[in-house]
Image 1: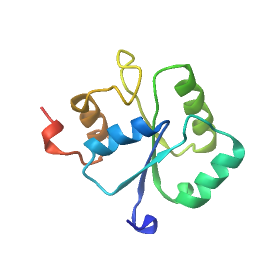
Image 2: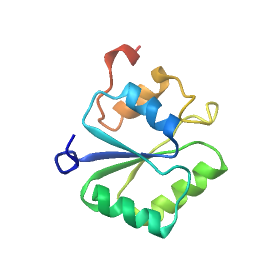
Image 3: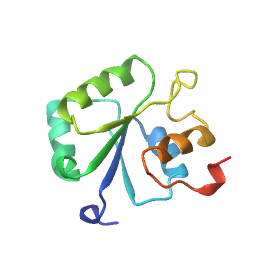
Amino acid sequence: MVFEELEKIIIVEGKTDKQQVEKVIDDDVIVVCTHGTFGIEKFDELLEEYQLDDREVFILVDEDEAGHELRKELRAELPHAEHIYIHGEYREVATTPETVLAPLLISKYIHVKPIYLR
């Protein structure tokens, strides 16, 4: 997979979030993990490595205090990013059912595996 050819990026918090999203998507999308931390140095690395200013960026984080803080920081640094919100009942991206994630991703024109559509 060559990063320069892909335009869409989904930013998630953890490894299990990334695995859950990758399980559902059927598209050339890069899923980037922040590992729950966010600092200017870490952000600069992500910005440069993934050319975030030149791509369609989506933020998909947990519905908890850490997720809200990360979303707030990313909103300030990437004002062009679109936000995807999971329902508070699931709290974590990793535990959100695939059949719930799929329509959220489709709403942002990200292709998903048909098996997760009902």
